Each structure stands twice: as C-alpha cells, then as structure tokens.
Length: 127
Image (cartoon, rainbow, N blue to C red):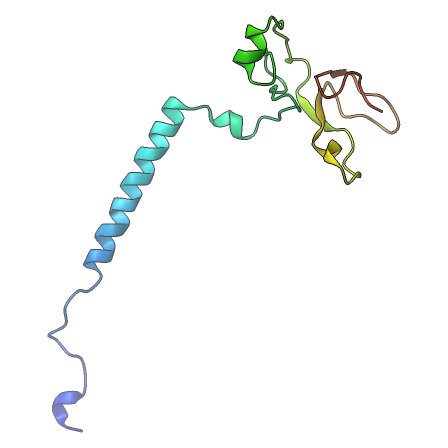
C-alpha cells in the first residue's frame, strides 16, 4: 500500500444532486396537489360517516342513493343534522347485512332501540 492511498481523497464529486432535485420536485408537486384538493374538494367527506343509501350522517338536505337520481324521482330532501353517528345493524352475520347501516342520534346503550333515520335498506330502527 503506497503512501498516496492513505487518508482522504480530495478529488471527490457530488453524486446526490440529481436525487436532491427529484426530491424537491416531489415536494413541490405534493404541495400543489394538496392545494388543488383542498380548493376544489371536500376533505370532510373522508371522515364523514355514510348510511346504506349514501346519506352523510350529520348533514342537511339529502336524498340518498345517488342524490340527483333520487331527488329526480320525487323523493323529498331529508335533514340528517340531528343524526351525526353511524350505526351498523348486524356486524356478526356472514351475509350482506353487515353493510346495512343507519344514522343515529346517539349510540345505543344495551338492548335499546336507537333513534334513527330510516333508509331503503332499513325501514325501521333496529334493536
């Protein structure tokens, strides 16, 4: 081993510059897409509970099942503002009933029937 192989090499080059530019482009693109999403969309739709008909629990003036189609068929607008919570009716069954849900005023306690807004799947408030 010669004396020149020991120590630091001073003729090094930067290899991370292309990766830095790709990362900065990614950051700018994410900020731009986030701005467009918040400006044109409704981020609360991600966390708002829906019943079986597609009504948003806790929101006013809805028709359910494809709102425009249901309202066009003469269905009246319904107010769900007093029913902010979603209640799954039968989560223990192995059938499609696990997808049936309704909007309720409060979580049911014990074996009580909750006060709810019925929909096309559930014609009465379940126990």
